Length: 416
Image 1 (cartoon, rainbow, N blue to C red):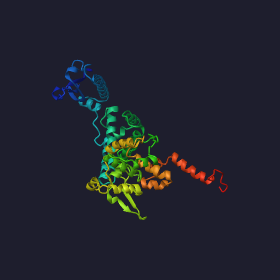
Image 2: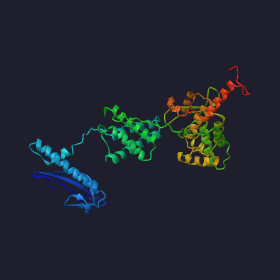
Image 3: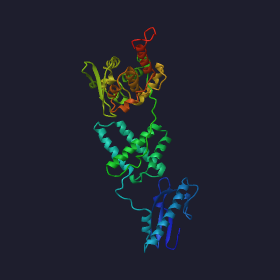
Image 4: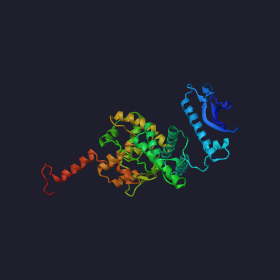
């Protein structure tokens, strides 16, 4: 289309580059005083849906609105670039108009994708040296996929320069995650980790400030379900004829009396058992998640379960302490186990850890510092989430108070 005597802008199909699905790329041609230059638009269309005369997509094209919007916007921006150049330069060429519209990218400009690559590759090296958790690396990689999908969905970009990041990125990304049926706490944690990725880029000198630093990550304290002691005993004493469910029950009960998470329990070996200073057997293992040691004295039930599987074929062939299934099977079988035992709670691999922290230890007045050490937590904040006041704890405390204040017959104890 001729804009004026000097400038012409044409949108045309480069048919020799047709794709297998029949679509053809749309190119843009700029002509200034007979000289030509151009570029690929990045848009593709089936020739039957292209109006050659009007240089627009027909309504029979699924993407006609996006393509026609691009054509209109690009034509206007190219004309604007030409007018600016014509007003400031003695001579204007088609190449000058193209460069003004599509400035050459800065080669050393760092992007969010590059920041993820730096962050995740470094953590992968830690995992290789057994100084990081494979599960955490998987979560970092999942966050990268979520971010790239978000940029494409929200901004139609494959990547974004770090200098172009802004506070709205965090807010919009959080909203995007919620729309993907990701829980509020999980979405907040992803945004928090995104902050860490950008901070790593700052440390590398790629960007001066973190544009989403001001985004406040708020978390709702979840109600962490656990078993009460009578439910633990009921499950432990239940006669189960199905071998796979009996094994799952034993592993679960073992975790209830040691506080080990699934991942740690899965990697336990006979070598992790040792004799402590008290002459009793202990079990120790570094948590893959934090690298902190979990060192727990073995109570009689845990010891009994270990002895039960000492000659189990799976344990012998794989040098394992217990016959632990895959995480998926473990959680699936736990649902069956709960039904068989008549427990109306949603059991997962982690509820056993919660049971140890709350029902087995804290309700029986084991100090929080001791519980923190056994759980392998690096700070009190992680342990305090278990330190909720339960009805059982209230009952125990009030019984002790009643014993101090009153006589067995119910009269006030004058000595108090």
